[in-house]
Amino acid sequence: MAKIGNTQAIPTPQSALEICLFSEFNQSNLHADELTREMLAEQHRFDFYVWLWVTEGECQHLLDFQSVTQRTGEWLLIRPQQVHHFQTMEGWDGWGLSFPAEWVSADLASIWQQLPQKQSVTAEQAPLLQLALQQLKQYRYFEWQGQNYQLLLQTQLHTFLTLLNTLYAANQPQEDHQNQRWQGFSQLLEQHFCTQHQVQFYAEQLGCTEKKPLGSTCLAHTGLPAKMVINQRLLLEAKRLLVHTQNP
Image (cartoon, rainbow, N blue to C red; front, side):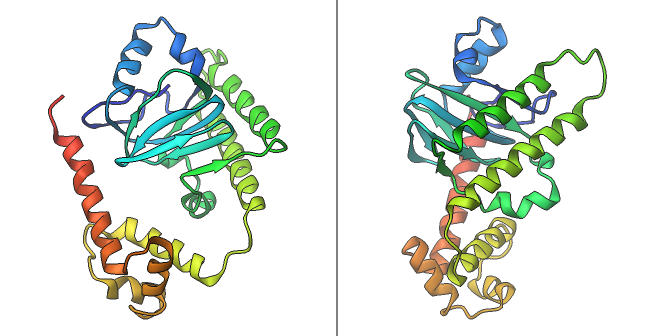
């Protein structure tokens, strides 16, 4: 598993990509894994993507200060800089995958950003994911004897992410204009919330008006007006930074 820190964002591990079954990690006697388990039991921030798929049992998380229950057959995507806390380290098993944001290729980036935080995997889809994860794990832990295998790992990861995007997209109804507008607004907000706090900026970028349709879109998806959505994102970042600056 990727190493983390309980009060600060930790750079991506030198190996860049990590993948394993959670039971393997949880039962490991390696000192580094023992330290990592201690850190995971506390509040922390990842500096990279973490993808978790529960295949047995149920896992409880706090993600950006909100409770998240991950049941059997559900995967969870933790994005860089999100504040996370495992509330249950026992009673479940599944796959864990971590990788740097830079490994998400440009042609996948826009689709990847639209994936939900949590998604169920059907019985028909599960064998495809299992096969892809097992192959990715084999490539990760093969003894390459000093050869530069990073490009190969990136290619395998690209294949897995493409599969994930394809399976997710296959389950979704055709998006309407309001959903597309919400996704566009969400992406713009992530890019500019530090410097742009006015609804007008985002409306202009999306080519629409502040009240309609952007305001209506925000109300439909969050129950909040657009200005409040922006303020909530600023508040979330303040909470994340507070975790980052607290003493261990």
